[in-house]
Amino acid sequence: MTRYAAPGTEGAIVSYEARYDHYIGGAYVPPVLGRYFENPSPVDGQPFTEIARGTAEDVERALDAAHRAAPGWGRTPVAERSDVLLKIADRMEAYLEPLAVAESWENGKPVRETLAADIPLAIDHFRYFAGAIRTQEGSLGEVDDDTVAYHFHEPLGVVAQIIPWNFPLLMAAWKLAPALAAGNAVVLKPAEQTPASIHYWLSLVADLLPPGVLNVVNGFGVEAGKPLASSPRVAKVAFTGETATGRLIMQYAAENIKPVTLELGGKSPNIFFDDVWAHDDDFRDKALEGFTMFALNQGEVCTCPSRALVQRGHYAEFLEAAVERTRRIQPGHPLDTDTMIGAQASHDQLEKILSYLDIGRQEGARILTGGERIEYDGELKGGYYVQPTIFEGDNRMRVFQEEIFGPVVSVASFGDFDDAVEIANDTPYGLGAGVWTRDINTAYRAGRAIQAGRVWTNCYHAYPAHAAFGGYKQSGIGRETHKMMLEHYQQTKNVLVSYSPKKLGFF
Image 1 (spheres, rainbow, N blue to C red):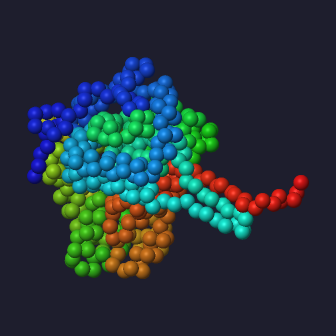
Image 2: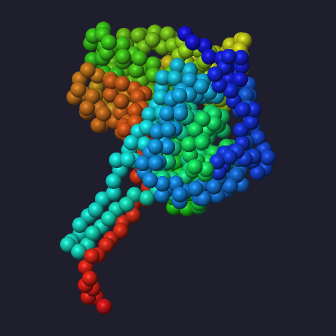
Image 3: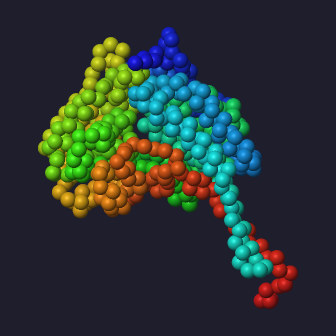
């Protein structure tokens, strides 16, 4: 067990500044209107820094800086851009523990997750796109003996990126790595709930990027996010967040005919076929862990396996073991490496989750474990903690259909394969899904039949680079974490060349 000291206290390996302004043009600048807001830690509910409250005026300044920097960065040789991304990754690796602690303190998630997943994955995505951009090539098409079509990849220019609060540094890496590799300048708006960890990250890597290539404007959605997403001066908008906000982002971008990448909500099915229970072995144990993955990151994951569908043949036995496994999830201080579930990211999110616990009860769903807020005394007093909760009900209930974004799973049974697929697809979302079976044919058929952009098979919550991630239906547009993202941040230019000296003969 390791217990990290809270940032800014005696023995801490990381400290936050008392105030963070906007980062524009390679320097910190105060907000035009001079306004700030407090940033509390979910660990104890107490503010630990204050953040510049951005407005349209600050967005314009950031866009000015980005437009000044974009042409030079876009012309920077690919090898040099790749090298910058590799240096960012190396710097992050050297400060992995401080970054992990910084994010845990601001987001509330267990430091065991930031140490083992969030920060290492973010590092790997910078390295992956550093390599991907080195391998990218244009093309040449010979139309005829005298005519050649050349195709070049060119950066879009200045792009807007709006990231969520559930994985502040990893979601930033998912968006920044391909955008910077492709030669774009970025104006990034972090979530108002978790802006400080981005600025701590900047304090470590900002010197590696030319001024203006990356700009960060803090603030709230309506005041800063809307002006950024609706600006005619951005060539693309990338957003991760809830579906309702994604619709607004799409509307803003459409006014200026700008492309979007949207990674939105989900209500992911996690399907367990009877043969999982055929043997008491490592695979059964792995499947039970897969069930409890609904509690990873406090359930604040767009692909949270929040609907567990269990085949009727071994339903009772499986569910009894799954409830027992869930009860073994260890809550506690997020900076303790033994803690398995930490605090929800904000008071608003805590209240939303608690409201859905009431909704489930009112609908007649049966609580098998959990269902309550955890209220600590001492240093965790005032923090935003919820028990991992299992509902038992049916797929028509709101707790099965609506995204809760908390450590809550709703369980139902199914009969045969067709029944499982029908229930799995009975949702407006299509981001993620899980399939657990010992039968390779069942696994393949289920993976193809489920309407989701990512179907984990005999695993869950793995997010490696080079595996495309994105949604079907109302879960979004576009893909991330794969080399195809480079083209999302580029335009294709065709240079059509005639090498013939002869005229066409029309005039």
